[in-house]
Length: 135
Image (tube, rainbow, N blue to C red; front, side, top):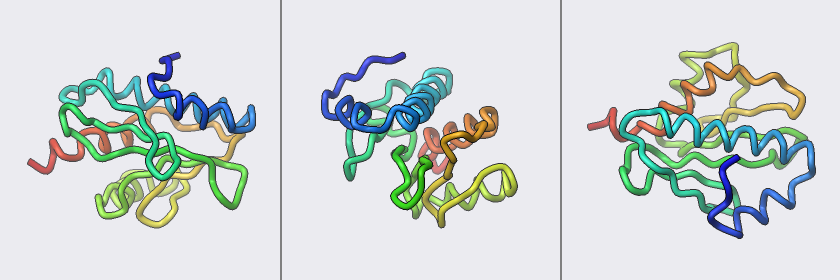
């Protein structure tokens, strides 16, 4: 498990209920893993944006910010991208029945859901290389 460089991010994870924290830490690990094996992405910066753990391709500028957090109204969690990026509509096109979506900004998960890893890795990779494809 990748250590937290930012104590504020570590504090946010520590404050989550245990079951939710496990799911979010697994999602965090997946984001770092996809970044590590995706050409052009480089090292991620982990910080807080709007109080949510956020992952930026600050050095390479290859992608859009990914945020992860609990859902406000339910017991699940989500992976969020910029709503004007067009990524969630692309995810819907690629995986119409694989994920639950929130508008143009998120993929949603239930805590006890078995996450389709290959498809989610692809979606994360698309976010982390968003600006590379735009060039």
